[in-house]
Structure formats: C-alpha cells, structure tokens
Image 1 (cartoon, protein in one colour):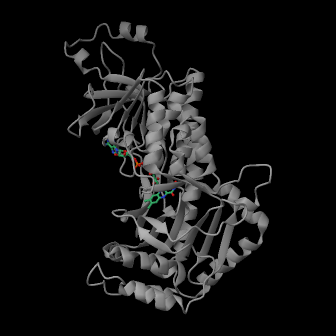
Image 2 (cartoon, rainbow, N blue to C red):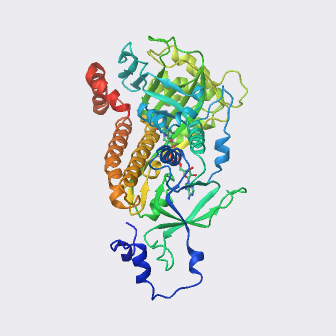
Image 3 (cartoon, helix red, strand yellow):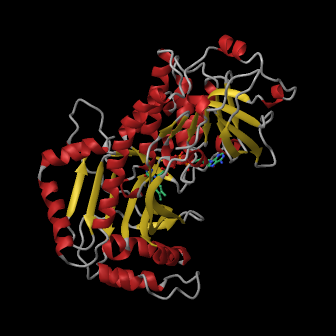
Length: 509
Ligand SMILES: Cc1cc2nc3c(=O)[nH]c(=O)nc-3n(C[C@H](O)[C@H](O)[C@H](O)COP(=O)(O)OP(=O)(O)OC[C@H]3O[C@@H](n4cnc5c(N)ncnc54)[C@H](O)[C@@H]3O)c2cc1C
C-alpha cells in the first residue's frame, strides 16, 4: 500500500479547530496558488467502465450533486461523433449479459444506444475440435410463451456503448461535472497539509497535461480527489500510485478480431428470430474460435491463437483469411494444422487462392454438424489482433482510491466476460458511493469502500479463474486422458438439463 503521512491517519479535526491549532504556524504567500481544484470523485479513464461510473453517479438523485471529473487521454469528441454505415461494424464488439443490459437501462444509457446496431442471441453451440463433444445452450427453450425471448447476451459495439454513455452524461447537464478529454494524467502524488486550506496530505493530487492539439478548455494543472477511481485500463497509473500489486501472466496468445459477412442467415430455429453464437475449441492451434452474430448477415470473429498463427492469419489476403475461418469451424485438427503452414498465395488478385482450393477439397471428406453459415466476406481493415493476458489486482481499494474494469482485472476473452465484469464493478461502486452519501460518510474513506471490494473481488476472481482453467484445459492437444475427461464433462453437462440451466443462469450475470 502507498505510504500515507501519519498526520492523515490522525482523528478527524473540524476546520475551525484546525485553524485555531495552526494559528501560530508560518504562512507563505504562495500557498493559495498551490490549492488544487478539489473534486468529490475523479475518474481516470474514459473507456466503457469510467464513463459507466460517471453515468451511474449522474443518474442517481443521491450522487448527482457530487463534484465529479473524468480524465481521458484520447479525444472523446471523436467518440461522440462516431458513425459507421449500417452495413459496416467496428471490430471491437462485446457480448453484454442481461445483467449488464439491465444496469445500462437502469442508469438511462441504453436508450441512447443505436439498438439497430445491437443484436441479442439466444443460443450457443460450443464444441471441442479434437473430440467433437458438444454442448448447446438454448435460452429459447427456457422461455415461457408468456415472456419475451430470453437472451444469452446482446452483441454491442464498444464504440456504440461509449457514445451512448457520453450522451447520457451530457443529458444530465453540465453542473458539477468536468470532462477533460485529450488530457493525460502525468503524475499522481499525495497532496499537502495547506495552512490556509484543507489538509490534503492523504488526498491524491493529479497533475494533468494536454495530449492533443485541442485540449479541453480550462484544464486545471492540478486536481485533488476525495475519491480517485482508476478506470484506466491494464497499465493503470492509478493502481501504480496506490501501490496495489497484481497477479497474472501473459497467455502468449493473440485474439484475432474481424467483421465478417455470412453467405446467408441460418434457417431460423423455433421460435422465429432465434440467433446463435458458435465457439469451437482448437487445442492444437492454441485456443478457441468464436463467431458471434451481428445484425443482418454480419458476424464478429474472436479467434484466440498462438502469436505465430495470429501473425500468419493477419498476413493472408482476404480470400485466404476467409477460407481459414471456414476451415477452422469444419476441418479436423491435422487438416487445420496443415493449412496453417501453407505458403501464402503469390498474388492477392487470384480468383481462387490455394487456401480456398484446399478447403473445398478437404471439406468433401469431412463430416461435421451444426456449424455456422459459410463466411463470404471480411470488412476491409477490420482484421486486428490483441495480446491476451490475465491480471488480477490484490485488492480494489486503498485510502481514497478504487479500481474498476481492466485496471482491476483482465481475463481471457473466451467467455466474453471482461467488460461485463467491469460494468458489474461500476454498478457496485456507484452503490457504495450512494450509500456513503446517504449516511453522511466520506466517499473516499476505506470504511465506505470496503463493501465494494468485498462485493466484487471474489466474483471476479471466480470468473477470471474459470476462464483461465478452461483456456488451460482446452490447450492440451491430441487424444489423451485430458481430452477424454473434458469431453466426458461436456457430454454429461449437456445431458443434465438442471445443471445446464444453472450454468446458463450464472452466465446471465
Ligand atoms: C479480443 C477481445 C475480445 C473481447 N470480447 C469481450 C466480450 O465479448 N465481452 C466482454 O464483456 N468483454 C470483452 N473483452 C474485454 C473488454 O474489451 C474490456 O474488458 C473492456 O474494454 C475494458 O474496458 P475499461 O473501460 O475497463 O478499460 P479500457 O477500455 O482499456 O479504457 C481505459 C481508458 O483509460 C485511458 N487512460 C489510460 N491511461 C490514462 C492516463 N494516464 N490518463 C488519462 N486516461 C488514461 C485510456 O485511453 C482508455 O480510454 C474483450 C477483449 C478482447 C481483447
């Protein structure tokens, strides 16, 4: 934990007693210049977690009058004006669980989302590429005829969500709120015990610096936070300031993402409109491939694989890349390993690439069931990759500091839970702040924050740990006892409707 001066830990002394105690102390003319701008809550990071927290605080009548600030390195004006054609989709898409969606509805952000660009899905097909054992989750079968179709999750572009959160914050008015975009936090340190001002010796004081050509007007050079929230991602400067340690490792895997178009929509299963997500574990290639539905005949890809495979896939021309995605859902492991080592086509304009030839020949000799529709196109510029890592902070709080989202935990994306956990943090922290305000407590005090870390740490550890175990279990290639055990597990769960329903309810968030 960061060093805090002993004076900060002394019992509370009211301001008038403090001023009489300090009468005899020397005053310096420069002291008043040193008083930083003081906020109740300062959030570093304007990603979905940071903006979610701000929107939640503004939405509650109890916390809407707190003086809040948000600092974001990037240009939030670009996020506000983000727009794509209706047939184009960003490659950063998240599957939001029903719990996340209802949180966003409760804080009034969901109505600002462009819901024509979101898509709920009701069914998941998950299978092992090595043994072919399969499990399917179908919410449509769990829905009674008297309720709306229940969903596994709703596919939502991160940019659409960020834009909606910014619109919700703007709707709450500009009183008591400062958003410093194009601004970076250059340093954070404990403040000072100011003779003619407050005792800030245990308060985080942030130095701000403009990052872009158009910094926000009137950005103060220094601001102090009664409560500093780190929503600043994996390399969180707030976490570093609070001296909170993280456990974790790099998976040596990359997640390839892309926006795809499909040949045609699947014949809708009953009830009409049911949409399906597909995930096939590919132990010999380093991780699963997932195809998740987007509106129309579009889909988003998340393919977790080794760094070498990721580099190979990204280097392929579009037709060969598409052939590899179709192959990954259909062919056997040896076939796939062979194709992953094929020489790249000499030209990108060839009507048939060697990868397409190879796929059409091999697919004739392969048996498969319930695979996604054929991929026919990949949106230009949408293929990208991200390193996959696991990190978990040892605690989410320290005096006057709380961490949310990726600043607190980063997990493997195979269950699509990272952002959902972040929104869960934000819902919990905003409740803790609301409770403190309602009960006249100091929002930055450890006593106010303890409930937050108690509520979230174990939940996040459980989900992050489960994803880690699944990653490891499904990275043992070949037919062996591990493959047998995992197939046995999948088959058993698939045949036990109560266990499956339990898992599905847990996945809802
Ligand atoms: C391939 C892939 C697929 C995924 N799929 C899913 C999914 O389906 N479902 C799901 O729930 N999650 C998914 N995730 C995880 C999800 O994308 C992240 O958990 C989420 O985006 C994290 O949001 P955040 O706001 O916590 O952090 P970030 O989005 O990282 O935001 C942090 C912000 O802080 C700002 N910042 C950093 N340092 C400073 C500084 N010094 N000063 C000012 N600002 C600063 C950054 O500019 C950034 O905007 C996926 C992740 C990957 C890699």
